[in-house]
Length: 568
Image 1 (spheres, one colour):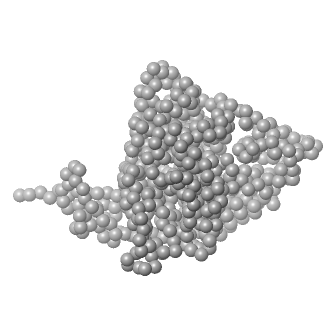
Image 2: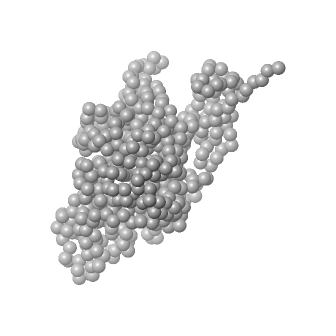
Image 3: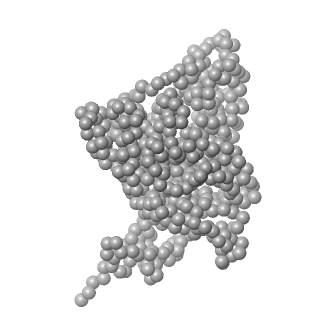
């Protein structure tokens, strides 16, 4: 007698139409398992031959995506800057790649990839990979095939594609900036420090292994500030009016080249390993390129972002733990600044305990070298921390690890940052908070002329933490500071929230305009929430959202709908 060994391959998929699967050229059986509400359906492939360890098998899957694929946003020509051609971009983090390609959609699995993309010849295709040539499509003279290869192993959430009427400008020896022609020259000017940032990051974290570092400025509906796709960072156009915040976004995405892309959290419960370390390196870049005072100032701003996230989720919500439990939790709904800023606060606290920034950056660099090309858990990170600082284990043992890692709310220790840059912002904020009607004449334009761009952001951020200002105060602030005309998006979105909270009705259309003319979740969700919470305009918020829903990214639309309590 003889035995047939049935080998099964299970891939993640969601809303994919599977036509045929073959293995080594042989058609094989497949089935889609039970559909989960947000994870999709497992694609179970039966391989009718035995495999030994190390043996290769080529599995080919013919399929098509759904129009509702959450990884993909298809823009009509009128949704682009040029208004002539359609546009496609992807956003796969955290578990959306399965709506674009059947895969093992987990950060614990890394792979190289090769791709060929056929597009109309008037459009350009780009991917999170090295460009590997292009040629006319032999099956259609009106199309071009672009080829890509990614030789560095990476997780599925970093697969990215964009197709549009794109142009590029060289901004460094290993960098180009891409966008529609309407943005490209402004973007090239704004991103001129990219090579300096890359070199600074390399001096801190080790060699940049990805070869090319290009930037792509997307249309306004892109839901994130930036996305660290290897070889091709995606960036929101809102940073082009963001002054110092632009440098922070680019430094953050560059830093992900090491923490996130090279060393990756094994599961999304450990996302602080990606984000906390990336914020830490981002702020070390600011320290090297600007000053330690700026790094401290950014730490203060980050603490405020953390306070706002904890307030939004609730101080007892386990999603504010540094290490979360995401069993049956949609990662999109769990997203917040907690892993970024609670993670940074822990690393900064450890930096102080272990001997300062140079000493602790030495650990971070060593950690990257040890776990490069792999994935890591919090326990493995912690074990290596104790190994690296073996002569300081007694200090590490006194850290409230449970309070930091597994307890909701704010961290057990508040870092004592240098407040030099923040003091002027705090003083001006308190003047407004304590001012009586008769004091309003004392405010002048000179108050904010003394503040640089990061300080102006901090000033309005501080006001948001206070009780709503009286309407008379907000109107006076506009009269003397002219904040309605400020183009910096970080200032503008906070200022409009202040106005709506003060029930200044003239600000409502401005807030809704900003919420819909771009789709960055950081701005769009809070602006819609503020207008919705102004009871007189709740219905207006819902109406405006419904009118613009189709133009928003599907994830953004889903989360705003939840915020506005819209069923379905």
